[in-house]
Image: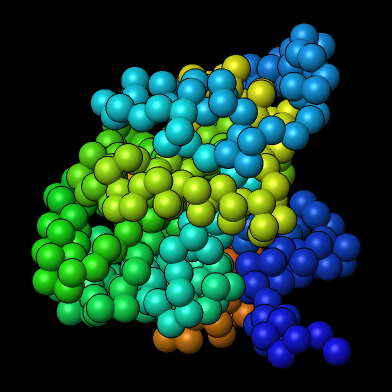
Length: 394
């Protein structure tokens, strides 16, 4: 018999993944060209050529033990130094290699830092809507997720409620900007206000509250929007980063944690995170891809391809009568469902072979997420179906 905890997780397995599997089933019935799968945030834009070249060069040029062997649980020292320098150049920070821990993607990094910080019963605050896996990551270490009610006007965090919900058991908050599922970028004023609240509460409660910044979409921002780098605003900030989206490498599982020397108990946190990296079974981030990404730190995917998708989808859906905030980043559009029950709305959308994810999966009922990291032509083919779906409700 599997554990009771896992039995519950299997029962409530990811709606996003279930929708993805449904897409494969419908494709077999109707043909792939007639199914419009907007469920999964799986990048459609090709990795930069520099990444492909770097992989080949590493294999051909490097000593095999430096490509395939073990290293410190934090990752290769020279890779970490290069990444620290790259962050410093871009954001005016002063990190060194010992501030970086290479991780198995951002998800691996979040699990490492939550393992490092949480005692059973410790609270982790998130702002709805939020990436649903945060529930599982916090539960992995017997923490308690505290969800702040969504601000559906502009999807900036509800800071009044946030301040009220902080307690002596609050160990961390998770911030995700650009945001999955809304595509909203938290403004600099929002970040400053957030930091001010945290500083005030730390003093009041005599505790350390860590802000964990989950940043897989940092480079995916449109129209010149600036994404604040949160370590510049609050000392107890830890950054989790991934190359999954910025370099279109989700399956390679490569990312890093940034742990600034300013965080409370810096040495202990770094040491514990290294141990967590090992005992969670990661041991270290994949060696070959560590070496490869270090050779192309200035490379990025072709953002304009996502922007074309964003403009096409957003402008047409608004024209059809859908209500949504225009995304400033990432590759998701968060639209209000055309009926109160977002799950029923997503089910009705399947009649038109439209696969979208109910907003309740992200702690925000009444909405749905549409991932536009897909082929432009597929969006074009889907538009008449979105229009037909809207007309059902008129």
